Length: 69
Image (cartoon, rainbow, N blue to C red; front, top):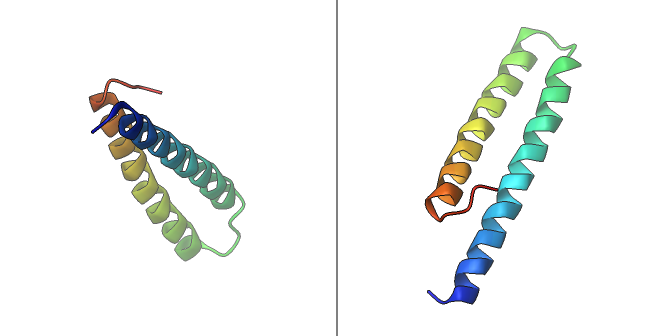
């Protein structure tokens, strides 16, 4: 892997991390304003949990390459 390949990979990782963070924020806001009852809240909470796990994985992957941002 060349230096350029590594940088592109890190840029993609950063972009994906940002995307997941924005999706978590959107779902959090949707959860707060959910008026459709417990099933709606459960579905949103499940999606939030999945995204949180994905973000944790992305952060660990970034930390493993020496970059924490």
